[in-house]
Amino acid sequence: MSDLNVLMTCPRGLEEVLCTEINAITGKKAQADKGMVRLSQANWRDVYALNLHLRTASRVLVEIAHQPFLKEDDIYRTAKNIDWQQHFTPDHSIKIRIESRHATVKSINFIALRCKDGICDFFREATGRRPNVDKSNPDIIISVFINDKESFIYLDTSGEALFKRGYRQETGIAPLRENLAAGLLMLSGFDGTQNFFDPMCGSGTIAIEAALMASKKAAGLGRSFAFEKFNHFQAAMWNDLRQQAESQIITPTIKIVASDVSAAMMKSALINAQKAKVDDIVRFQKGDFASIQAPAENGILVTNPPYGERLGEVTEIRNQYPNWGSTLKKQFTSWTAGIISADRELPSLLRLQAKRKIPVYNGKLDCRLYLFDIVEGSHRKP
Ligand SMILES: C[S@@+](CC[C@H](N)C(=O)[O-])C[C@H]1O[C@@H](n2cnc3c(N)ncnc32)[C@H](O)[C@@H]1O
Image 1: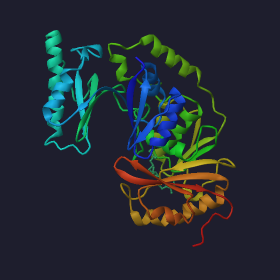
Image 2: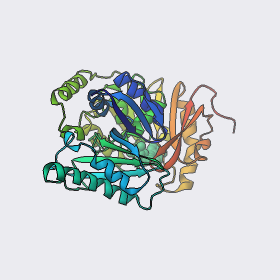
Image 3: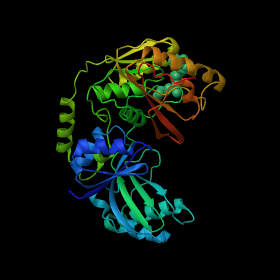
Image 4: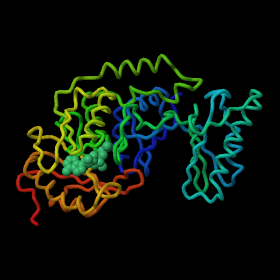
């Protein structure tokens, strides 16, 4: 089958970098929308490869129905008319995930229920049995999107969200999701060949993602995917893709350094790096950003400083920003710095002129990635 419509979801703000990734993996051009990217004329090999390699996506969904939608019962009919048997059996457990945009229905939960009824009635008529619903650990997730006139039904080919790479055990305070960390690196211009530093690394997510990128290690090599349970799963093709990915791994020669003022966070970051098998690539060192030295002459610094939304005292944090700005200016000349913040005022306390402010969402937090080219004399006049 080479005419699949595929929808990839991602954190808002990462759509363009996700399109670039999709193009590099499949050679095909994808279209960006808000928090999602569409790819048409894809095949199952593309779908497996996207799940394996994508760093910025949250899920890879394959469209199996697209129908007009006016009232609740339309979804029942649509679901009952799909030949579900080609995808899975009544022995698989299922979960329906539903999202709506501008739909004028009373209850979207009722739509999910009608979709489930349609699937179960299809199986009952075809096999005499029906799949069970399992909301916490389903074999198969079916995603339903409705708007004011259409419904879309998708098979979730990822299962667990793609940002769950399988390496993060220790989270610390306010950790970034792995796919957002990878997206921030890409938006900051990191391509795996430059030196990298995160001076406030917390549980180490950004530095670990940088190490995975630098070693060209596919993001999904350490986990399994929902498509492995599908009836039409092609194991030989999947093994082939995994072997190819394994053979692409290299040992990076760049410096990747991560530090944090907290010894406990350093310990968590190291445990995560060990689990991701990049602990020999990332150098961890305890230190205060205000008095840190650059680990190399040039490179890319990406960090997620505390901004008082979920952590500590706002005043104390405010007082530290000018010191961090001075460190950047004095120590990081010739570096590019990317700093994510949900606060619109704190980054100005760095007293550096941002060359770009890119809107990105960290969960529900409407953030900006502030990009600075640190050059001699880049300190803004107070
Ligand atoms: C929002 S967390 C970073 C989370 C991280 N991106 C992750 O995914 O786990 C901010 C981190 O900054 C650290 N921090 C606060 N002040 C610091 C300073 N002056 N120097 C270095 N690290 C600092 C905190 O210990 C905390 O781990």
